[in-house]
Length: 372
Image (cartoon, rainbow, N blue to C red; front, side, top):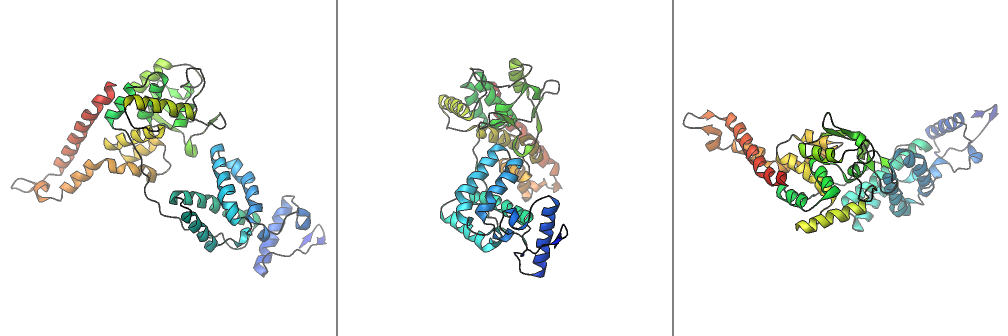
């Protein structure tokens, strides 16, 4: 190739005509950006760069600008503790599907869960796809086969347990527990809730902040999704009694924002005094979604209130609304499918029974919950 009137000859990492043309295109792109090529660049040919050499560059140039601080810490740990020790000496362009499968097998042999293995594969997959793009490697990144994971299990409180927990909590912690149970907000979202996000006229809360314990700063919520949650009468009253013009909604007695350790300790104390099992703040979020599902709220509405990026995450609560499924199965039984001797179809009776069951369940569960 000719550069500034001078002919330059550089060896392509791929010893084929197509590989040479691809490498020439990469070099011309570097020249267009004002970057040096050849020995002056101080870099090895793309195919010869090892995983350990490329990983720090990927972290600084891609992860840091595009990820929140907590995600940066998570990916940095995966790189240093797992990926670099396994792939470090390998040239990036020589990491194929077979080597990835060996990596998966080694993680499973070490006793890691399938979900953890998939999390590490996600980081590896993104790093390799970026390497092929940035380094102009020939071919395509290796294909990944993700492990199938069992549905995650979760705990939630019954309405009676909710009332018991609230009756043994007081002050700002009780207000935060109630808000979590009636809005489904995450712990970080509760810690970072601002008075500017409370809409008194429309009686709703805008979830647009999450407070990080690491940076001590406000960040965006998970998945960078802002959502709006209506306040019920109890939450409205609690917040109205605490109202201020600006700042954090929930502050500790010393006037400082809460951190994870403080909240865990306070919730554990309330559970102990109420005689309940030890739970985390995320259990209150699961409780919010579970109660919605049990009372027949459509799952797409639950998804919107929870701020889930996909309906797949929300589907974990689907089994908690069995009454509609039971009524559907009853329609197959001749004794319940038809009414009387005239064999009249009673689909409307199915709807009526669903409505009655929902009303009865709501009345039975709300009494101890609201009495608190």
